Amino acid sequence: MTKENYSFIDEVRRRRTFAIISHPDAGKTTLTEKFLLYGGAIRSAGSVKSRRSNKHAVSDWMEIEKKRGISVTSSVLQFNYDDFCINILDTPGHQDFSEDTYRTLMAADSAVMVIDCAKGVEDQTKKLFHVCKMRGIPIFTFINKMDRAGKDPFDLMEDIEKVLGIRSYPMNWPIRKDNNFKGVFNRQKKQIELFHGGNHGQDIANTITGDITDEKFSDLLGENLHEELKSEIELLDIAGDNFNLEEILKGELTPLFFGSALTNFGVEPFLKSFLDITTPPKPRKSNLGDINPESKNFSGFVFKIQANMNRAHRDRIAFLRICSGKFEKGMTVNHVQKNKKVRLAQPQQFLAQDRAIVDTAYPGDIIGIHDPGIFKIGDTLCEDQSKLQYEGIPQFAPEHFAKISTKNSLKRKHFLKGIKQLAEEGTIQVYKKPHTGMEELIIGVVGVLQFEVLEYRLKNEYGVDLLNERLPFHYIRWVEMDNFDPSTFSITMDTMIVEDMNEKPVLLFQNEWSINKVAERNPKAVLKDVSV
Ligand code: G4P
Image 1 (spheres, rainbow, N blue to C red):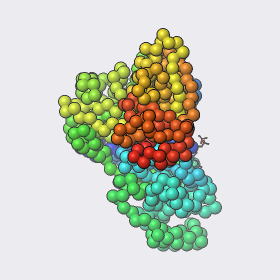
Image 2: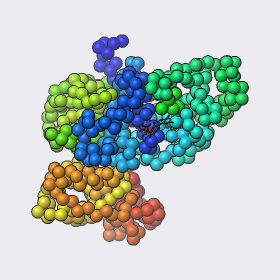
Image 3: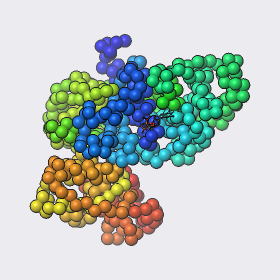
């Protein structure tokens, strides 16, 4: 079928929208690049990386990104593979990742978790996994860098179960000799797949396949390795979990793949299997019940706002996840929260290499729309007048806190306006002491870089010089209990009680010991690290 022949329903059903989560350096960028290579979106590997280093020249990101040479915000890539239209939501790989990274996961229908085979599950992966688990989306695991020395595959499975609390089902099993990655045993097809070629990852790799009992593998692998493989597979079949599609789709069992993104070994089988198992966009929860993506009425929600992508215009881009209906350039939609009509002119889509103006888009797609300052994170846009609102986007736990004020008290109005805007865009979270005005504000951020973003933007957009005193807190808990009273709630000496902008009670902690102590002392309170 050619692209022109796809009906609206075909377009929805061929969409796959997922995020790649990992700790920095596990190989997320390399794997993404290889997906693009197989999708034909790039001719040879290496272009995404060079794009990363040349980014200053090709796009107009914020000044601060240029200075630091890192990506502050996450982006979206779209490409076609077979009959599928794939949207990859990228998440910043740098240590200073922000709340945006978490929010991006709200727009994904599934996640690919990349793990370095030598390191196992690392910190940032743990945090991102936690959000995927909360959403109950399918999570696929790609154990990367199998071309290098790494942990034993059985130990890696145990690591995933112990650290993340999810069981795994190896879809393939690695065949390695003296740390040379030869290939895998494909458990679905029950065949050996030996990799070769690929020009060190520049090109598509080839495979030799065959039944595990085929004598040729004794020659190709050596008798010992062949026998070892057979007994490992037997052990997996007897002692391991069974393949259970229902559990996979609920995010309770993770299909596990071994491969090497750099050498292209195992990338295409992984992609094929992933596309086979994952589903198109599913119905989304709203105040009017579940909304079917195949419904004709256009709707979507804003999950991210990015400022100043184009310095000349100082404008913002709101990232919209389309949930139902067909999007058409120039259409007028209802901004539900503001009860206002908005015309979606100049919408952008993020194709493999560049941003481009998009004419049409479908459920599962992400489009960037011009934001003259009217959108908030979590806003719903829809075609009809139904007052449809998608479930809000949670506030995720910041890990760094500061007390802020303006150096010049005459600028106080600008300061408050700037803080309000930045909070609505989701750059910072704002708290204050209970029952006080806005005199003394505390802000929380997920990554410390956001402090710099805040300072830079207040100065550049609002002319405000910021006084910023870092606080020693690293943990936050939203308190859920009836009749919360800050004057009687029992906390430790080093804990602070504040409230968020929705007037929900919040506790700021310096260490986990205090969290446990406060939980013990207040058995009626439920302490949550996400506010929905
Ligand atoms: P990230 O986006 O998750 O941060 O990781 P990225 O893809 O940038 O990969 C981090 C490093 O790991 C890179 O090396 C990359 O080449 C390497 N890498 C990725 N996949 C594999 C793999 O399958 N096998 C091996 N051996 N290495 C892999 P670098 O030296 O930091 O960067 P570069 O000089 O290659 O650009």
